[in-house]
Length: 363
Figure 1: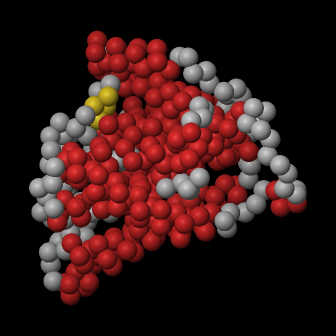
Figure 2: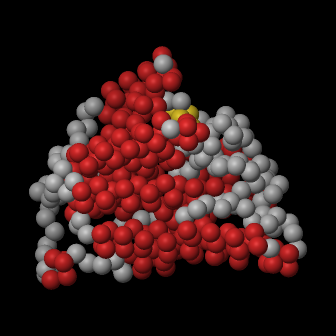
Figure 3: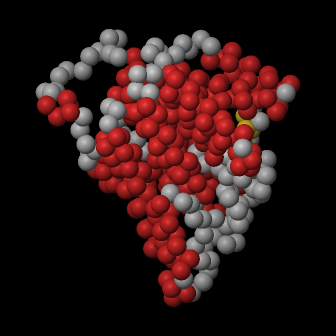
């Protein structure tokens, strides 16, 4: 997100692409694929509507509420070009609270209006589609409780159908939701994914893009989730060390865009690399505070699974004999903190849907 957004938010053209996909869009797809895998795993471990909804709500809304309130009361007054009295009395200011319903609102009076992309937080558009995906997992899980593969394939087909609709051709949301569905399909496989096909799959994908660019997105639906999940199953010292400090990925996602906009507003002539370094450092610090002060405490309120409340603690099994899917889930979650530093959301336009590819000026 931070690296990918550095180009459009600073007004720099030609954001990097991989397989014809801009890197900040690719990061959106990586997160949706990972989310599809982890959320489906969560439902399969504990198929309870109450626990599932409580866990999802506690993960999303407390940190989001803090972000929205601080954006209105702190970032807005700092960055606005209108008098503070006018800012405070404007219905647009308090309309920003609509973000708490997952219906994204991007404007505050006079805030970032001279930036190349005059939007307060263009990352928030992904929350609505992602939560819709969560809600789709639940009814399909109830109807097809004993058929996880069929359930996940149906979810993917629903997302593909949405992508094929006129809406799907104009926005990133349906495309991202397909990646969620494919991640859910991979979650229903009872064995770890092999690592050896990763490099050949990437080579084939890039080769198809070079020869037939219009077909590369459909192949990316398969390749990107497979690569992310398979690589997530590998353990490295860096991933293990990063996971010790907590999961900063959501905080980085929430705060990176407005932090980057502040840097652009007050230091517009910074070199691109220095903008990235400053934003990454500041955002990581804020994300750490968000995790330890808000997110971690909220997640502690999740309803316990029935067995976990009564079963005494036992010594964890060595990684060599632990459940492979548990190891995979842990590694992917740890990896998400590092991955968040290189993207999550889409480009935005000052007057339109931020995930509309053709309308955006952001390269």
